[in-house]
Length: 130
Image 1 (cartoon, one colour):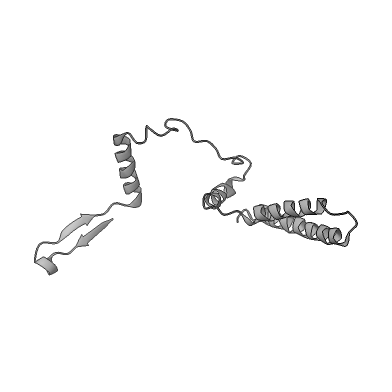
Image 2 (spheres, helix red, strand yellow):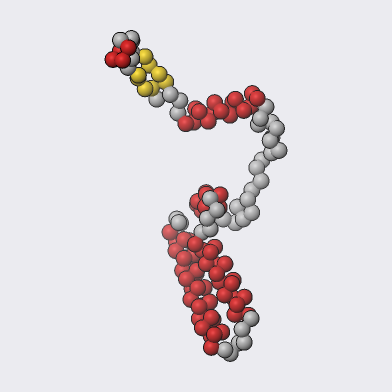
């Protein structure tokens, strides 16, 4: 990508061509500087493959990158949050007397949440996208 800076209007001088590097070129340049300075070889993982995150192989390929981005941002997918809610409801339900009205209402909420999770997961499987 080439940008032309016109100095003729400001200084009366000639038109100069200034090249600006692309993002990939800038990254490559920074990596080369780090390599020359020895910064890369000092990294604990230098020369070894990076460790796969837990669950990487079990995650469908089309969801790996989006889930990693969410994880790195500290954001849980809605389905994971719903599963955590489900676990909390089940724990709460276990502490209640089985035949109480509150336990019946809680079982209903558990059932609805399970159905909602199942529908969301099925929609993900069917569409192949988030």
